[in-house]
Length: 147
Image 1 (spheres, one colour):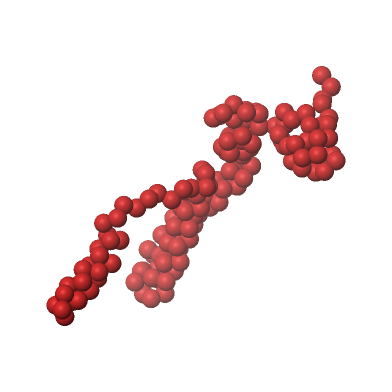
Image 2 (cartoon, one colour):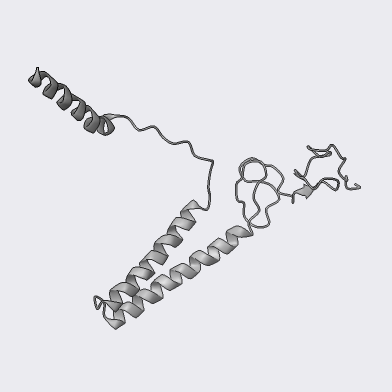
């Protein structure tokens, strides 16, 4: 009887340990495209490299000349990333698909939707799409440009 219980406990232990290793992982659903994720990741990597560089210089692992050369390279890279980040903040985002388009674009490169600024309802302040004639919340008519 004791051997049987030992076998059962051993089997349960092996299943508990082995199951996570053999089960198929399911992809987690994403919340949608995040065009700035790569940029944020790269900025974090550069900042981390600068911190590591400072630490290695303070601990004596880098010569002063190497430290200054590498620091200048990483700082220039960080500056380019920050400038690129500023450019992306001024890029018009498509209201339909979320794509960031080049500055000055009038229509989305992907879906062709208008990139005109979103207008808010004069009655309730709810933002709406540029081609809306009425507010989706309160039904108030939007101003139609004379044309």
